Length: 377
Ligand SMILES: Cc1cc2nc3c(=O)[nH]c(=O)nc-3n(C[C@H](O)[C@H](O)[C@H](O)COP(=O)(O)OP(=O)(O)OC[C@H]3O[C@@H](n4cnc5c(N)ncnc54)[C@H](O)[C@@H]3O)c2cc1C
Image 1 (cartoon, rainbow, N blue to C red):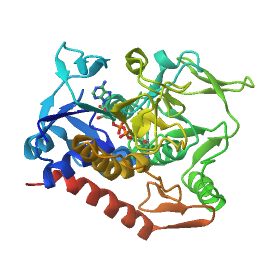
Image 2 (image 1 turned 30 degrees about the vertical axis):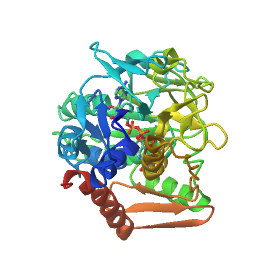
Image 3 (image 1 turned 30 degrees about the horizontal axis):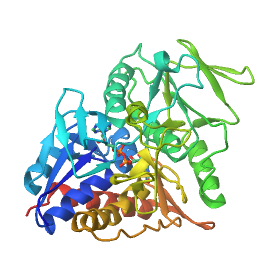
């Protein structure tokens, strides 16, 4: 093979694995460039633990600068803003033009606040996680003051919303200098952790009750303002801060690339993870949807695509036929409850809870992060 320029856009969960794998076993003649808007990429599985005060900022981030240096990857520290597929170049926000033979996108999602009036101004979206962490720090600082926020609502009854509500409760308890309690609400419109099995749902509901998080059931938020939030059925709940963990959409710049997208703007790919109309462009993780076999937007799928993507990037560079990726839908979900315990669920019936489950999750997540923080060639 003569020179083959692989350009990775975004340091998401799949790309960090591609970088590591191609450093462990380099592909002859391949040069790799990582285009990233951030040098530290967050690992979402550890975000609730960070909110609860268990993990430091450094512990829940992968240092892309270090990883790129150790792995011999050229780093372009700017957000990708456009793709010229005819010329095969990516243009960044600060005007750099990066040529590719193969391009791969793993840029995550942005929150879709369009259905909630006032959310842009008054809500705190949990995605992108980097922006959320900065706003969370400001919220925690304000909450530590006697006149700071005391009523906080999480919008979104999915796994992230449940974990964040419990994590916030754990973090805030006892923070008030005068001992005034914090009130945490969780607004869920489509049931609680509706994609998980009955056992997990029951345990999640019980954990919220045990920790004094108020579940606002069937509360479809249509407006957030300076006083609180309003549901479609006109109920109004006062709140000093509203965190939003609901629907997401693809980053808007992808729509300008001409890449085929679905109605939510996610890049449509084949099972081989290439765009349906361009075999030079791969797309993985939350920003992409396998047209024939869509999966939920969850980090576990992005993580598992890492190995399949690496193998297909090698095949493409060698001119070989690509292989389809078959996602395993029977995946394990672990929700931390903020009290040194966690709930695990898998498939239609498996559900367990306990301190050992939390230790298990902590072990899995720390092991994942060590793969990058301790990697040497
Ligand atoms: C609180 C919370 C907890 C969660 N917990 C779990 C969990 O336990 N398990 C699970 O499976 N899922 C979990 N999720 C879902 C998970 O966060 C996402 O599914 C996962 O992050 C998607 O990974 P990704 O690799 O597609 O993108 P991301 O992890 O979002 O990575 C995208 C990367 O691309 C970069 N980027 C973005 N735009 C550009 C650009 N234009 N140019 C260059 N770089 C760019 C970003 O800075 C980032 O580094 C959780 C989500 C939240 C909010």
